[in-house]
Amino acid sequence: MKSIVLLLTHERLGAYQWGHLGAEDLARFSHDEAGIAEFKHWLSQQELQRYYLLTDLVEEDLQHEMVPHLNAKDQRALQERKLDQLFRATPYRRARIQLKGKRGEQDRLQLSALTSREQIDRILAELNTVKAAVAGVYSVSLLTQDMMAKLHSDLPHILVMSSCEAGQLRQSYFTPDGLRFSRLGTFNPEQEIALQAAEVANEIRRARQYLTTLRLMGREEQLTIFALFDSQMAAERETIWAALGDDAGQIDFSVQTDLQDLAKRLKLPKACHTWLDILVAMLVTQRPVNQYAPAEAIKYNGLYILGKGLFISAFIVLVCACILSGLSYFQAGQLQGQLAAGERRQQQLQQRQRQYSSLLKQVAASEPARLQAAVKMYREHIEFAPNVEALLRQISQILLDFPTLTLDEVKWAAGSDVSAEGTPVAPASQQDAAAAADPNAQPGGTPWLSQTLQLSGRVQDPNAYRAALAQVNALMQRLQLLPQAQVTVLQWPIDIRSESSIKAQADRSVSDEKGRHADFVIRLHLPAPTVPPQQELAP
Image 1 (cartoon, helix red, strand yellow):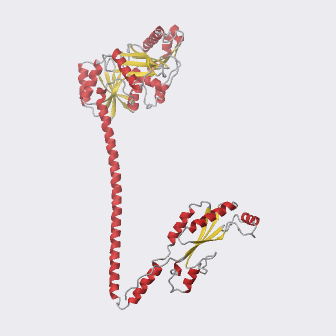
Image 2 (cartoon, rainbow, N blue to C red; image 1 turned 90 degrees about the horizontal axis):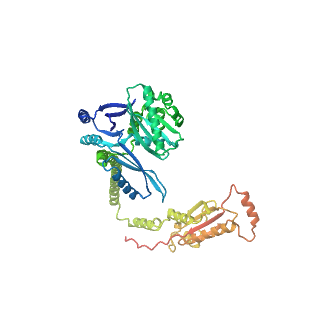
Image 3 (cartoon, one colour; image 1 turned 30 degrees about the vertical axis):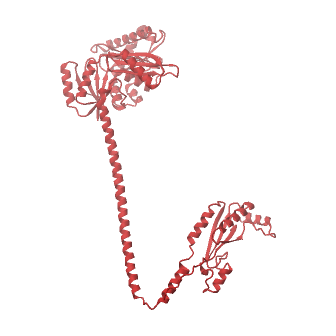
């Protein structure tokens, strides 16, 4: 949506839009009936636009009052009451805290209003007729106040002089607290530039006399002039200075700036060459908060913003729906692939079942002994085969409680013990030895179902002998809690035999710091499980 600025002055109503070269003049309308008809016709031909109504009128009243420092709700009620007392006849009014005091102090309240409402009512009525999006009603003086707030000037007395149209001169007086008063003067724009400079000098002189009369500034204090003139009037600053005569010593012209430099400081586009360019750019690019328009006048702009928000929300929802649909499609493809794989697996199992069924039919019924031997072998050897993975998981869970012990090597053997080199040795128990001597015996289980693990590891600090022995001893006790476990410590972190030397072992641990052998070796033996007696198969 493009933006159009409607500038209302006493002479005419102008329409401007921002372009590459600055503010572009779209149309101008007089205040008579013909101008109103032209404005209606022009509005009917415009597409969807956002309108900013900017006023530069004499009929703008500005007052200040000191009010108690209240909370937000009470402050709004107080402001509405003050506005009703001062500006009951116009809806175009505004109140804001200009200087906020601390708790127990007072606030400086700025009250302003556009007291002449007829022309503004007529313009807003025509805009509402075509349902135009009106962003707000603004005044040059309050926009100048926003500009000075961004410049952060700390000079005690500043008179900002600007001109939106030829023959008009607005003077706005500022202190560090903000805008104190603003007035609009006129002069003949067709006279020579030197005479116009003399008129400007007279306006400066009258403004200073007015300020000293109201005691807003002392008679000996200097008034700083901040002149925002176009290039033609800016060249006449020396003429204005000379026209001040004896009052020139009380006027400070040192604080001046080029309009392009001012636009840069305000972060406005580079195409600002006139004061009107500055105002239009501030409204179009920075979109300040509405100043004077009542809620009824800007309702269509609110509806447009709401519709735009709903459109963006709907677009986001659509994007999210597309993403979720894509994920659902991807997951559906994965499920379809899994179903196809499951069907293939089912077909393979069915084919294998058919093969086994055909093979079963080929087996002679006269061979029950072979089937009985196969079942016996499964029950005695395969059904109770040792589960190494489950055993290692149990040992890993136990080692989690011993963070100072590091396991370097695990040697495992079934039916026999393991040596330090990992080779099988004789059975670990008499029960296993007897079972190994007589494979047909069944008292204690099949001998090869027994398991033997040799755990080799290191301690975190081998010099802490007591702690190392305690940790290894605690680990041994935990391993003994396993069902039917037989635990033997083959090597301790320190030789606890009476004939050993602690000093020699300490010297050896220091010398082997880079290539340390295992600090402890624990052998864990689990006997073969007892195979329950099985009923003989019928021949």
